[in-house]
Amino acid sequence: MDFGLTDEQRSIVEVTRAFVERELYPHEEEVERTGVLRPELAAQIRAKALAAGLYAANMPEEVGGAGLDTVTWVLYEKELGRASYALHYTGVVRPSNILLAGTEAQRERYLYPCVRGEKIDCLAMTEPGAGSDMRGMRTKAVRQGDDWVIRGTKHFISHADEADFVILVAVTGADHAGRPTMSTFLVDLDTPGLHVHPGYRNVSHRGYTNSILEFDDVRVGADALLGEEGKGFELAGTWLGSTRLQVAASCLGRAERALELSVRQAATREQFGQPIGRFQGVGFKLADMATELRAAELMTLHAAWKHDQGTVNDADIAMAKLKATEMLAMVSDEAIQIHGGMGLMDELPLERIWRDARIERIWDGTSEIQRHIIGRSLLRPWGA
Image (cartoon, rainbow, N blue to C red):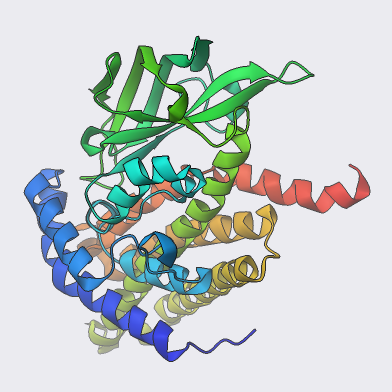
């Protein structure tokens, strides 16, 4: 594995970092203070991201995206991750790659408009009684003639309040063992019977909204089925793999920013006649923070490299997500400790990074789920 970056990768990192510092950093204070990302500001950022070639960069070239390999995409996500989540995820949109499973007609109606910045998608899997256990879903889609009728409730649905359509996973049958099978559907948000309710107030990622979706006998045609009937679990698994790498990459960016601020503080803040970084109590913290960050970065890039080679497995991605999210919790906490009281003041981004770090160990699969995946992969060859 070559650890050096290509000229193209260096260029993408530089362009993305410059965009983040110029177009996103200046708005962080407003989003944190108000808890809202103004629609006009989001639209402005999207337009600038489109012009800069950063919009839908996760998509293949054949559908209008940048066609980045996985390693380069992770480097790109790391740079975006340095900024407030609401600004970089809502403003610099990356459509769900699950849309690539659609027919050409579905691509024309949903995927291509997302890539062009004309539509926004949201994904609905989680339910009040089904989080990590996807097979515990109760939202059902039942055939009625040529149509499907959907009934159920989803919650924690990110930015559904501004989306144009939902990528829905619902129960459509059962396998030979009686376990529920799921299918995926594309449902326009203005479909009769689909109601979007405000979600919950969240300590992490201010300005990044979540909603509750209520499907009250929502009727969609046969052309709304995405992929094969009964294959929604597998399709969702494909999507989750890439998003877990995305979570890991964004955690790297925030941790890097927190470490940079901590090094500057340790080098310039003086107590007892010398920079505080010369005291072992601070210097050792910096050493541990840098070491953990490097380990998480290498693990994430390794998983991305294996993805490009076609050899990645669930455990590789689970390890990257587990390590990066838990590393960010540690680095952000130590960064505040190094800054003392000022670390908790909102004049610095550290208290935000610290708060935002908490959700990363929960969404897209909790740390416990990642450990379960890793442990299972170790025992499987033994038949245990």
